[in-house]
Length: 446
Ligand code: HEM
View 1 (cartoon, rainbow, N blue to C red):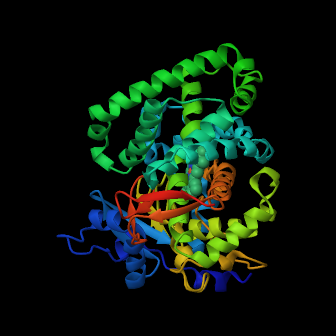
View 2: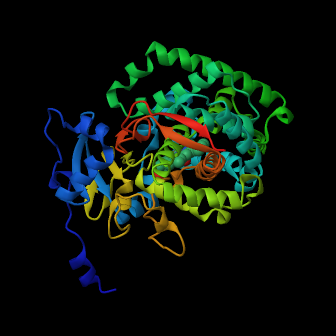
View 3: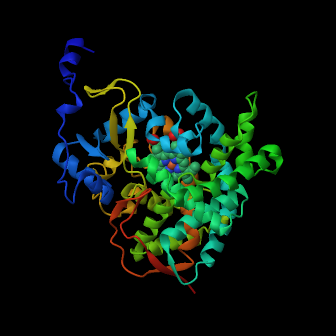
């Protein structure tokens, strides 16, 4: 390469202050409320005004926002640049300093190595019949009008608990677990208000119950690994080779992760899928035909359900549970000539690529057909599960549980929504429908 040409082509050096501040009017559409009301729309508006690099403030903290294919590549290729102990501190604060999500560097790598076997696709696929059986009995119990968001949470929690961890979680404990997981995620996004959030009695009471329940499991399974479910034995076994015994607190955190990791993301993904699919009867009929040809009992690979797979990919694209990630620089670095000082905050709009018409035609439409056949998209365009060293560890589980729920539910039930949903999104513990309660009746098909 010609060095003279490369230095002439090098982007000029810039600092955060060189980029426009996106700050819509403070009264109603103020930055924090704007993001919460419509996180994707908020950032798409900023991109349309300023391009894919701009500044904004969230909970009083200013950050540089970046998005697009280059940004995804930069963030994921350089996982060591980000200090996860800062941005995901709530997990560590609440579930111990060994909790995977807030670890960096070698400790993070070791922990992933230990937890990875729990998400082996062969193990998960072998558990598919049990997951379907759990889904069937949860659905059969959903008599009368049901609130769909709650139903999706319960379905997923019980599929993992029952089919993978051999647990029959009592209903009050299910409620406590769902609250703790939701509050953990909401608290993590509250910036300086986090401490007060985690001191609320409604949260501390639920957390105490959950810790007590999981602590007993950790003690029992550690004392007699043969009594532990296969998913957890894999985690114990990996830790055993010449390493010091794992503390009860660490084991408790691991069980919590296996049981609840991604619960909000996956539940909302199922919820969005039901909303979109049941409002597109032609596509619903095609999905039913696909599942009737290969029912869940005979299913062995996602290749047998291309339309279900395309549906899930499309919902992940259109309504990504984590459309934006916050990062803090662990050391001085730079992106396209922009100086990023150690400790500064970055907002990674990872799902910007999902809404670029040059990548996905008519990006705001629900068009699962775009993922059929030999359709090909740039490798880092589909960003729902993140990327790099911290990429979602639960992706194989989510990508099995969601199709299994669809395959169990679609052929058996018509879902009659009490009102037509708006399909608008808001910021919750994951990207969630704007409606607070989504009531529907599951009518068994004859
Ligand atoms: C549709 C469902 C899900 C979506 C969209 C999702 C999305 C994500 C995203 C975007 C990240 C951040 C990746 C990054 O920083 O680049 C993440 C991390 C993570 N996810 Fe998921 N997730 C889902 C389901 C699950 C499930 C079922 C689990 C089960 C355990 C799980 C556990 C985790 C954990 C532990 C991390 C942190 C990984 C690390 O820091 O090494 N997720 N997920």
